[in-house]
Image (cartoon, rainbow, N blue to C red):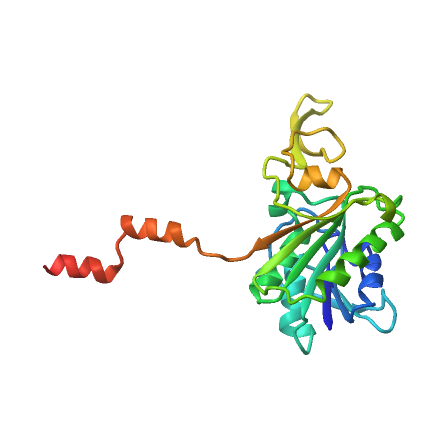
Length: 265
């Protein structure tokens, strides 16, 4: 199995190295990551300027890897269009430092890489750890939990138009309650803007991370189940036309052939 790995924390993030260590048990690994931290950049791509991809030996001689001066979505596009001779069977983005929950799915560069894979009809996963300080993380905890999850998922035939948002609690295996398939809690946002005053009295606004603060949430969805000690997995379908809404719009704006037919009568 060929597995393409990326993330939004940069190629030298310890979360990438931990993910590669786990995935080497399942197949041939290719790593194409941003050359620096690109968190919160969502699904943006680089236009009107060239991308530089530098081959690096960050994960040993057996892993082909490149550092790209671009976004996570750039990394997937560049890997599939140029850097890899064959398409991978799956794209896995992570391990992201800090959970990706609720509305933050739409802002996350980690998620965007998995979403980009699904646009190429390749299954994608985005994997995050529910812990914020990478210098304090003992990666053996999430690696053990992640191995068990991937052992099951990679043995299955994954749909090509779906990507998965996976959050791993920062717990020992004995304390993890298991895997919980769940919907995203759209009422939860990890970030909000706060007002700050500088010494001259000017007002600025800064994004504050509220992940470790009490927030309102709905029971039974991704945030609550993660905090209860479950690995959460949320399937997201990519590029789906809402057929019901399409029919509704066609009533407002009849197809051109019907419009011409009525006009000629």
